[in-house]
Length: 277
Image (cartoon, rainbow, N blue to C red; front, top):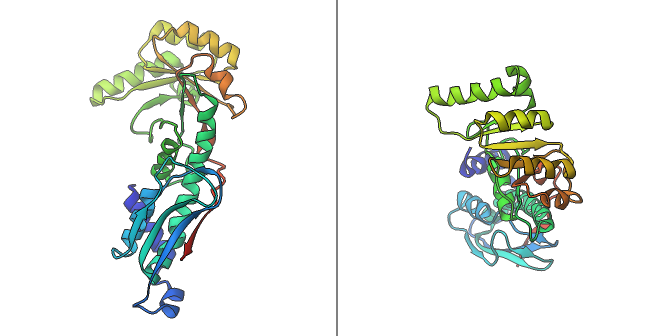
């Protein structure tokens, strides 16, 4: 689902057959101005989405960007101003805030993790733990916060996890089946395999046939040892129970990627407000 699709459905959900409050109280000829006021320290995200919402509601609304996605923001900052038909601005207001507050919450949260890795080479990845139908927006917010996107969905990478391994009858069977599938279907997808211990890691190292190894629930000491065993033959990714407080110790092992589901779930929206002026 594209951003345009998301906006269209969200507007239909919110407006229905009309914003009857605005339609009944605001003259159709009235015009006005409003500003997006920042009320909390953070990292901005969703400016492009706001513009699309305003444009979808009424092409007469003019939005003037004062800040940009990824900018550090402080209370009192003004991210943008809008000018146009007053009723149209009011119809767009809540949807713009809903998108930007959540996206800015995600970008702010991501930036906190990124800051913990200053001076190190590991990259922070998001996961598929996103709000249904809002994945594109939430993954954009991760990038705005300085993180990187993992696969977008089930279709753009083969990621063999523990349940796949168990159902397939073992790691080697799963890897062979994945490569056979790609050959038969003529698809060009990277293969990532999750390993849960050193026995599984050694099997993968001997067999090959993958691009990246996910080291799941390895503590920092074991992760360091695993990264040394892999020795750059494959990309490495750490996952499982990694927090803001512990992430630097994982990155110090030299692992290539660290995936953190908390980047996009259990997020507190950033405090933003649209005020007339």
